[in-house]
Amino acid sequence: MRVYIPATVAMLRELNADGELAAITGTAFALTPALRESYATGGEEELEYVAMLDAAKASLRLLGTELTTDPDVPMRRAVIAADVDGVELRPDLDHSVVKLAGPVPLKVIASVHLDTEEAAVAVRAAVAAVDAADMGDPDAEFVLGDAEDHELAWYAPQELPFLLELL
Image 1 (cartoon, rainbow, N blue to C red):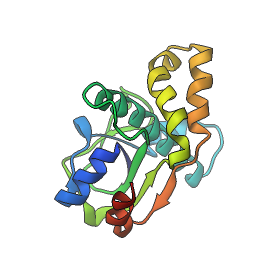
Image 2: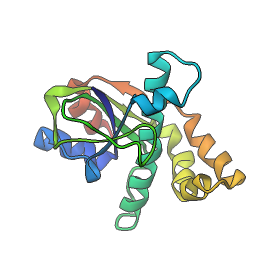
Image 3: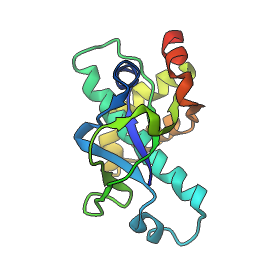
Image 4: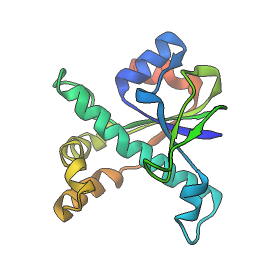
């Protein structure tokens, strides 16, 4: 199953160094039956994109956690797309949430997605607003939308070392 793992630049560095990545609490996002049923229309590719956006939103929370110990953390959402087996569906949490069986090796990663530098200001604001947006605050939803307007750049897994070197 193709999964989308929320990450940060620090987690990408860990993946590059260790050759594998353990998702925080094993949580990832995917095109699940519950996600498919929650949309009246939409093809496979569109619904996969919804799952990736859910992972990008979760990345904001990971950035918020990193900010508590490092005020200079790069403000870039990151999502790792991987093809893995042994995924447990978690419709009790949300339509696209899945739990991974264990660490994800670099060899099963299909792509890495990362905000460009231009998104940093919007991402920083979204980190502060994501919880309020989830509670329905329209101003916070607008701030979150500003970050979501920045498309994540796509990178092949073999580009990861070069990407990290350029950051």
